[in-house]
Image (cartoon, rainbow, N blue to C red; front, side, top):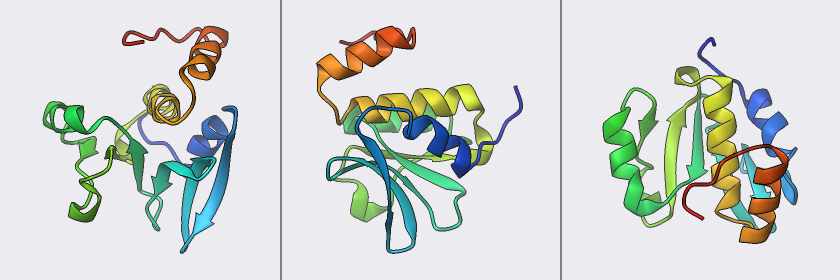
Amino acid sequence: MSLGVTLDDVRGVALSLPRSYEALVRGRVKFRVGRIVYLAASRDQTLLGFAFPKEEREALVEAEPHKFMLPKPADMRYHWAVVRLAAIDLDEMADIVFHAWRMVVPKSLARQVAMERDIVLYDD
């Protein structure tokens, strides 16, 4: 599969998830469930911040620094990581979007959607 996804690719997956909606905040596209942001695109749409467990993000960045990076210092207190959209494929993007969304919805809803989409949940 070719590398590089667009914000439109992200939008297609994010908006297919229950309770997810798009918002434009200070010129940046964000995806939310309720008032909680789980995805945020950079203004130039090359980077995507996503909900991710704080305690796991350094390992994520160390494992694939060409794809992932730590959030800016002001966002280090949040459960957040950043991915370069040009460095991932559609399957990786869909996985990132689903698992970010999963962090902000009830576990029962995440399990239901995972079953419908044949996604294996290892840590539930």
